[in-house]
Length: 122
Length: 107
Image (cartoon, rainbow over the protein chains, first blue to last red):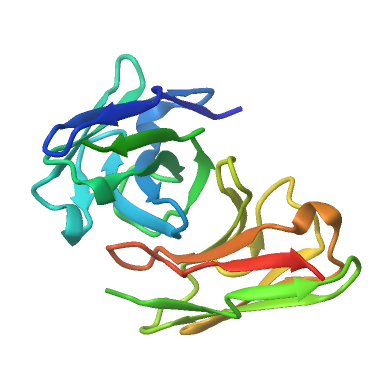
């Protein structure tokens, strides 16, 4: 049974960086990708980007380009999302989500992590 | 970017009602569309993928239809566990985009 466990709650000041981890288990990490999705308080879901569990290839939403970096460690089956220059409107729950294939083809997301709350406040 | 627009934004319904949620895309998504159920404090849950395919373990009262730019999620007989917010999401092209959500409330 596939399972994604994320790192704990983070509180950051504006301008700081945060790195959230997502540990995968129950499946072959390199056969899938991972996306990151966030939900700000009272808002809907927003897709941040995607990383291949196999090649490490990435694609980021334009609104996060230059501010976010996604990486993965295939030996430990852990994916990371680092966001820099945090602003108060980055306050949100951040989810990692498994993607059904390792390439940019038409794969949907299925298994969601439990979410990491990131609060950005001075 | 492909804009996804759901209607209605809020829906009040009773147990046993048939519920239909519509999702319109600003561009053709073929059938690369998924539906998720989201409850407060929990992770979203995949219901439907490729517009019509039911995810394993999801009750058969949920169904999806549509292609191109218009898609529908139907719940044939609303159950107490179904009160939640529902999102459509296209994965035809980057950036992947979600609808704004439809909250299903108790009437």
